[in-house]
Length: 193
Image (cartoon, rainbow, N blue to C red; front, side, top):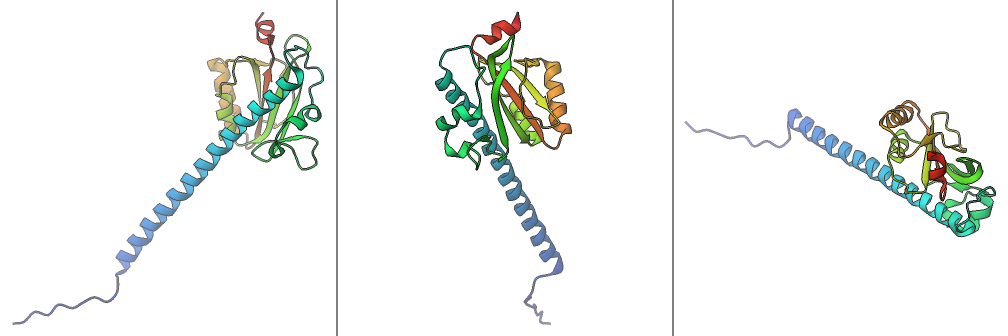
C-alpha cells in the first residue's frame, strides 16, 4: 500500500484566527506604548514650562519680594513662542490649554506668585501634584472645577499624606482639572509661621 500525502495550499481558519489575534495584541501594545510616551513627554514639557516661566519671572523681578504686578503681559517677551497663545496675550501649556500667572498671597498680597495650569488630564494632574518644584514652591491648589487662579497658601508644600490622598482623589474624579502652584522667595518661612 502506498500512502499519499496531500499538500495544503491554504491556511485553516484556526491559523487565520490565531494570526489575527497576535496581530491585534501587537497593535494594541504599540498604541498603548505611544499613548504613554506621549503623556510622559507632555508631562516633562509641562514641568520644563513651569521652570521657564519661573525663570522669566525671576529675571523680571530679580531678588525682590514684591510680585504684586506679575502678569502674563510682563513676562511674555522673555518666553519662547511655544508658550505664548495665538493672540500673544497669554500663556499656553504643552497640553494646548491656558496657563495663568499672577500675584498671590502667603501673608500679604504680592509676597508670592502663582503659576496655574488648566485642562489637565487626571494622569498629568496626579503627576504634577507629586512633583518637586524646589524650595520656592510653598503651596498648591488642585481644582476639579478646572479654574485658573491664585493658591493663597491653601495647601502647603510638601503635601501631607492626607493632602496627597485628597489631591489624588480630586485628580481621579475630574475629567479635566487645574493645578496651581504658589512660589515665593522667603515666603515659605512667612507661611510656616
